[in-house]
Length: 150
Image (tube, helix red, strand yellow):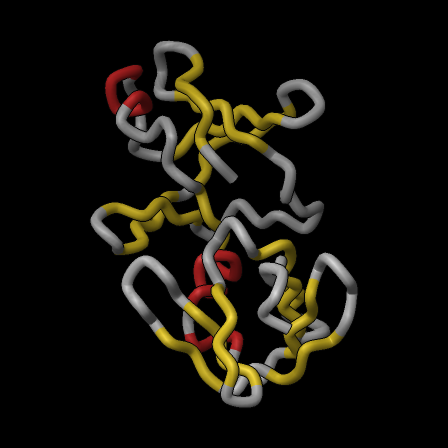
């Protein structure tokens, strides 16, 4: 989810909400990446805002200026942030475009600017823009695989 803009004078934010899940737990932190490191934030308040946005108030973000510093950044749930890490090893990789199973993820290559997952000695880019869904229950990663890599 991307932070679209600040909202109000008390540090509120408008966030794109395409991937909001119904089982959202306010007790779990969300993460915003600063200098390549995930920084946890707890949600103080959250409410729908139109059909594809959320109003989000983060704890310790209490002014318009603090909210403005976050505009344009990605907001991750823990499982979304971990998707670029070794936690997906053992998951089934599925090409989201065709729905075909590629194989079991056997490794992760943390190439700066181009993280990749390994399946059967082949590397597939695993950039956040290419990840469509991570299903921790089914242990599946749905990824848009660029044409020509399969």
